[in-house]
Length: 282
Ligand SMILES: Nc1ncnc2c1ncn2[C@@H]1O[C@H](COP(=O)(O)OP(=O)(O)O)[C@@H](O)[C@H]1O
Ligand SMILES: [Mg+2]
Image (cartoon, rainbow, N blue to C red; front, top):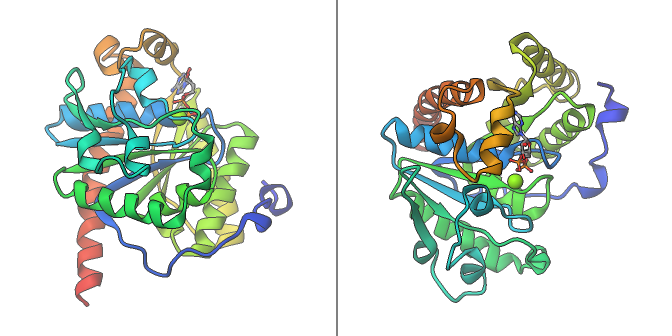
């Protein structure tokens, strides 16, 4: 991937506060391009973590195209919009997803006005999220695609950002753009890569290496590979049936792959959080 092809981020570059507050158990799931499988992956990762005994909250942070509730067939009575409008505190819109054994904060689709949200409201939301996170072992943030200020702020509140990409050139270049923007703001050191919809393990490795090479050559960054998920028709099947794949097809390849990632994430989180505490103490 060439720098010319990869680099289309200059005009959107903005600065983030030098050291934004973070939740030491918050993991963001991001992507440059939409439609790569972020929401499905966020749900399945939350489910896998819950199955291994963790207390998990899944936050639908895709404020424009929220669809965690849609993929799970839920009809939330309250959602993030109530919080953003100042009607309810964040804690009040948490709802349990009993089938998965984890909690959810639903977003709301089609709220274009949310992108024009005053910065103060956004900061308030971030602060409430960090507060609520204390009551959980892990909080997963399903973010919108791209690098708008909502994505940047929520991703900056996470201790680890899992950047989801597929092998499509546009997905890779957009993933690179995401890392490049974060490197300017100092948040890319927390990015790890998840290759989704890989045809097999060696193709997934190849996809990761392509992104890694661009990051090493142009940004002097080496984002680690967190894991890969194979392309699997049972993903679509479970979404169509609005039923989580770990219930509907627990033995699917994609299910096994996410379970493996969940194990890795638990270790990674412990390591990252120990590092953060050590550097805060020094
Ligand atoms: N591992 C996979 N195998 C097959 N299809 C997948 C996989 N991951 C995602 N998909 C497909 O990608 C579509 C988009 O997923 P979604 O989670 O809505 O993406 P995003 O949140 O990134 O926009 C899904 O409807 C599903 O059909
Ligand atoms: Mg989504």
